[in-house]
Amino acid sequence: MNASTPANDTPFCYSINSPPFKRQSAISSVYFSAIFSTLGLISNFVAFIVLVKSFHRTHNRSRSSFLIFLGGLVVTDFSGLLVTGSIVISFHLTGFNWRSLDPHCHFCNFMGMSMVFYGLCPLLLGATMAVERFIGINRPFARFTAMPKSRTVSMVLTVWLLAGLIALLPVVGLGSYHIQFPGSWCFFNVSFEGSDQVFSLLFSLTGLLSIGVSFLLNTVSFVTLIKLCCKQDRTQRRRDHEIEMMVQLLLIMVIASICWCPLLIYILMMSGVPTDAAHGKKVLFYVRMASCNQIFDPWIYIMCQVSRLRRVKCKSEPQSCNHNVAFPHCAAHMCLRCQHAVAADVHRVHRTMQIFALASRFIVPLECSLSVTAARMLV
Image 1 (cartoon, rainbow, N blue to C red):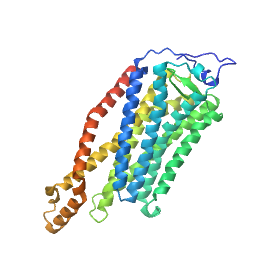
Image 2: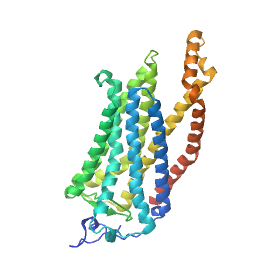
Image 3: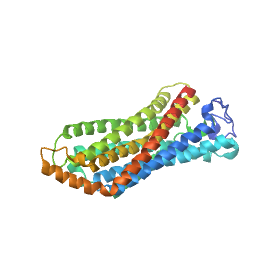
């Protein structure tokens, strides 16, 4: 990373790191950035279609609210990859000079705001979903008789607003955005000094607190569901939906923790104790690791939908309804109900499963191999 001596006429975003940088790693190439962004966009687009179809089919208000949250998460991830990825790819394709293109740091500030906004949104949405599920499972009578869809949309918009306000702070003086190695992106300055320290601590603690809240509430909710899942009564079908949503939420939390904790902890360490400036290559590696969250998240929804389709397919088979041989009249009733529920969708189920299987066979291994390659080349 090139460090320049600040001059009176040097724009603030170039006062610490001054382009051009020496690009020594092939990981900075346009090929990796383009493939990485394209796979993420495709994954989130497929996940959005899956969620829209699920939303139109569901009649459970609790599940509808959960799908709205997931939809907000997918839209956020898709937009983040589209905005930041297009800037990075444009840099690698054209090799533009930041100081000539953006002499007043407006473009760099926009890039930095985008990084912070699209970074915090998934973590805050994950914590919000954990709170909603905790109230719905552990305090069902404290809810507003199943949260209306408009209230759920308002909560998603509130999370976006909060993340946007935090991202604006460096523009108004609390912290600062600077060009980062290898010169293709901007991020806030991770430092122990002045307002940069305050914003670094705010960003890292907000992210870690969101993950901590998600972990605590999801654990309590999961334990509660485990205690109830074996009780056979009229609420068993509703609990099946609750378990499915809880599994998705746990997977979202685990992936977010793995992808984001290294960056958040590194920022906390660099801003919490007096040390040298953050190393550009380390920050780049941790940010790339965090960006994997936007790519792997959508496959949680896709794979869970495949699992649901398989259950529907099994219910459409006559032999699947004969498990209750001790109660033939109940089995016949269930058989008739299953057949009426899925008869119109059997062909669509088979076709959708084939599409998901084909996508997961090629895209997921490619994403994993790209992530492993990035880790090896940056370490």
